[in-house]
Length: 356
Ligand SMILES: NC(=O)c1ccc[n+]([C@@H]2O[C@H](COP(=O)([O-])OP(=O)(O)OC[C@H]3O[C@@H](n4cnc5c(N)ncnc54)[C@H](O)[C@@H]3O)[C@@H](O)[C@H]2O)c1
Image 1: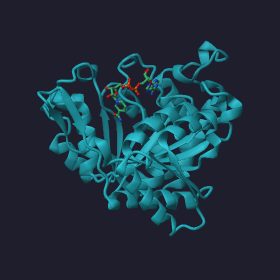
Image 2: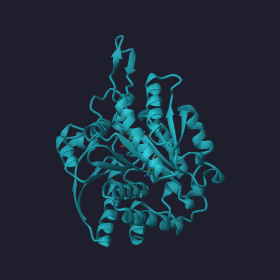
Image 3: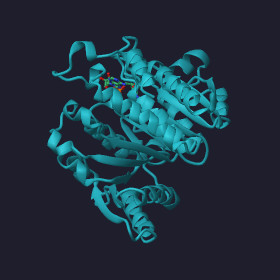
Image 4: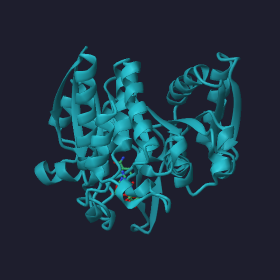
């Protein structure tokens, strides 16, 4: 199979982990007889420094003409600490999602058994947890009208959802539930928010098309609690942009670390695959970032955008073998891990490459 992949590392550890993600894609191509060609492009802080624009037109065009994008992260402390900055790295991310029509963000939360003790949650509560989140990505409070009034003393962000936006993500989630345990939990705040009442109404309507799927509607505050109390009760979870943003970071603790979680953003055109973590400037340049989320993002890319399930499984199995052998990066090591088994970014990548 011939495919063209755009590598967009972005900022901070995005650069370090995406380099490893590309290496594993290369190895898969060689092993399975595919021809992957690559290009790279700028986004985020590095793009602002080079062009003044967090998502240069050149990057957008390259994204649109690629078969898939392997993405790193955006963000820089310079902007985090300056709320008045008008041009910000995250604007590049939001614009990319809007321009590429990436309305569904899939986040599989699956715990590798070897990491049971790496989580702050008790192993007996965690064992068997396997959740697939569908976070809506192009609507909600992030994209509505925002601004200041009363001489800047009052700020507002408008949350908006259309029937169409809810329906298309709900359908994707129901379709996924049909291939899994046929359980779907829709998360909203319908007791308070009008957008949530529309959300619930639409999900209930779409549910009629999938009578085999057991549907539960939960308020987001209850979900936040139940994710930690009883993660195994969830199969597919579908929710709006803001709730999904927060709940999936919380759920990352089920997988042991932010460094373990991959995501796929899909929609009308090119799919974008990226770790859920950010640019992690506290560890940038130290060579300690966990590259497994980027590797698992590459596995999602192979499966979802290219339909290469065996190749995707080969990558996931390689990660599993490396963890079984006892190798850890710093973020997933615990008091039992011998110091010679704690690897840096590149060494962890090499271990995975050797196990493909
Ligand atoms: N999708 C994105 O690009 C994205 C997502 C979240 C945050 N951000 C941006 O990233 C910057 C930092 O944000 P933050 O600190 O809140 O979130 P973060 O995900 O970058 O880091 C949170 C914590 O997790 C650790 N961590 C994250 N990824 C890791 C990895 N692969 N290996 C080991 N440890 C890892 C970090 O060291 C840090 O302690 C900010 O500028 C923020 O806006 C970007």
